[in-house]
Image (cartoon, rainbow, N blue to C red):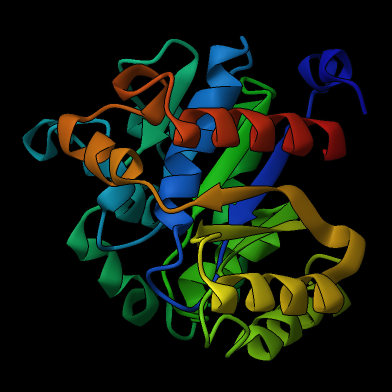
Amino acid sequence: MSNESIATRRNPSVIAITNQKGGVGKTTTAINLAAAIAHRGRRVLLLDMDPQANTSISFIEPQTVRSSMLEMMLDGECPCEDYIHDTAIDNLHLVPSRISLAKLEAKLTGDFDAPFRLRDRLETLNGKYDLILIDTPPTLGLITVNALVAATHVLIPIQSSYFALEGTDDLLETIEKVKSRPNPDLQLLGVVVTLHDKRTTLAREVYQQIREVFGAKLFDTVITKSVRLEEAPAYRESIFTFAPQSSGAQEYAKLCDEVMSRV
């Protein structure tokens, strides 16, 4: 699908960025992919569904958070717009998270519609955004299931380390379970290798192993280890304004091209 057709769709593509392993560059990917798409003039909504709230504090001061993802998920009366915050990036808006989001699973236990809360809330946006990206926690609990039920696509970041594929079977099994009943249209958008150190033999071997497992679903773009990528969130910037000439900026721009060509 062309970039132009995305902008004319009433129902946006919703991309859940997920991996139950922590430290794989999931939040870095959410931040910089959202920024890259917004810089191209697309209207992007970024949902921080990780109680650690690292995506949120990469864009806004915590004390400015008026309302967060927890309230949006629990309150079906107020429109979604009430929970959306502006960012310093044109076309990019955020529903932030707080540590209180960790209470969501307990609060929804026993509710028949618990896995559908996010999907139902997003349906009220009425085409306001071209793309919605979701940063998920490193678990396969109810929060991640809500993201998968609401999503049209899943993007999986995988670090090129020794235990890269550990737990991937569980994630893929969860995706298949979601596809089997609540969200049959869910698609695996692709897998992106992150935190890659191309100087090491191990990283190259792991990359080949990931390619053998995922084949055409593996993005051509590889995100290499970068100090600049690590530093940018501390200044509440994406890599595109913090270090626009860096390898990280170039790589996430290329990943953006690939993502836009697949949704």
